[in-house]
Image (cartoon, rainbow, N blue to C red; front, side, top):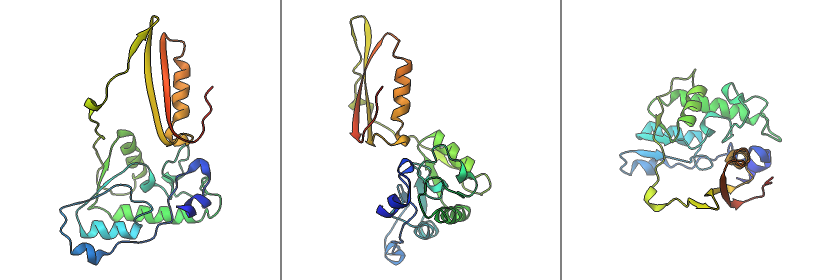
Length: 212
């Protein structure tokens, strides 16, 4: 949201810590649910909303980033403050006192959510979640990888002038965002540039990047 962007530094965005409550529990109780599956809840559901949902319905939450472990960051990057209390948050321009308070609320929510089942699409994210929750009794997180229909894609590998040629595609909403990792991909390609490979990199997305 605009407020989140105004309060936080660009290099740490996206951040989500200002969310209004929007759940009408009476309306939901009139529906028939076998299970509720929550994905990207930030900016749509408050901590109060999440609590109401898992206390009233069988609920599963799939994580897509670190947001539920922190006081606002979707990705902690090189900061480990979220392992303690998010005090002196380096991501905030103003309102640093907001983040520890939200972090405390989030930890309290996780400590009470023994009926909530968590899912991660990667071992990396699951390990971060387990590391951040060492002192909180939370249900074990399950790892269910995202799937892709490989029949929809085909390799563009070819061989020209005695070299193996590969076409790579990098796509992101904002290619300049550090969390998307384009800088890491460019560093990796730089290291293998001396190999007998010809690599064509196609970059898709908004933003600017420096290619050496």
